[in-house]
Length: 494
Ligand code: GLY
Ligand code: MN
Ligand code: MN
Image 1 (cartoon, rainbow, N blue to C red):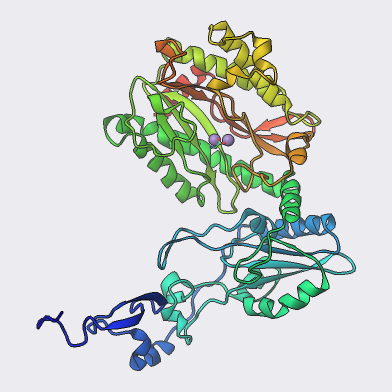
Image 2: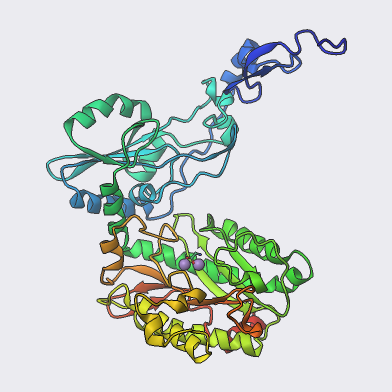
């Protein structure tokens, strides 16, 4: 088809190199000659080579992160002596062609390196006394290289000044080389010693992820050191502040904006004081409050209903909080809401009592569930006795709480999830473990086993806890857990 208004050559079938990014695009298509390829423009290419001054390329690693990572590498080395260990950071997920979701390094990499580096690979090679550590990175494309302006993923003109081997070596106290060196070393490395690694795609593509390494790291990460606990505490304090920000916005959200306004309020706070929310923030009003993963948050905020808020700030070192409070949007619980909240509070307190050094991991789960089952039975909601409900074959009370009541917390909101069943569920609690306790009751609006006044009530109380030498430290105690305390907090936080 021809059109006399089209420039000559328009519509020609070519193999496109995207004129904007210079990245080869496998799709064949058409090029408009009014938008010539920069790759072919020698005048531009030459002009771009020079004339660039200095830039700040120092990675912004958190204070103490490099030292903590060195200690963590030593622990891993001792746990898997004589093995070559490969841990990759991963890479950002593409949203469409060269638009990516924000990169967040794999938590094992963060734990061992102290800083997230896209495509970074840490290799621990066994030595007589332990392991040698080397970090491999994709070199950033700097002035003088065509990729500086043509590579939209690594070109500094596109993504900003980037640390290279020298800057990372300085900041992280590690030997750092370019990834190509790893590709060269790869065969020798694998021939010499068995590899257990988190497969870093491009570099060790085809080799399987090692469950042994993942499990070992998960188990080691369960026990946090003082630096990690300080990071966790800071994340929780930021989160408590975020709850206050959200509380102040409730009247505005009732008027306009609904759940999304509150979700956006917390997420902006998390993004400003930390790195990001540590997981998709849950904001559920009324009938949405009992929906465990209500991250859609596209409902209105009902001024007469409960508002369940499950939110956590992930700070810049990667450690995240995970806190839930359930508030009456009006500032005052009605009778039914208060009764449900009181029962969950009793369960929560029983759970806290069952956490401590030397306790079985399962103890707090059992303690929380016993209180909930008894309370549900007292309200006539169980079709069987409390004992039968609590028996392994019963579990009828779980209709109103199908989720667990706590988990490890750290670099991941559900931390250490690659551990074996034994390491996780059959373990004793040890000082330095961080966890949540989070019983709740979830009375869905369409659950016909419930009396009308209970339908559409969802309550969870979630605290972040550290096991200490002689008890526990509740990091999120800045937020009350009782209905009266929450009312007072709401009144004083406006
Ligand atoms: N927000 C996820 C959880 O509480 O486990
Ligand atoms: Mn939570
Ligand atoms: Mn949780």
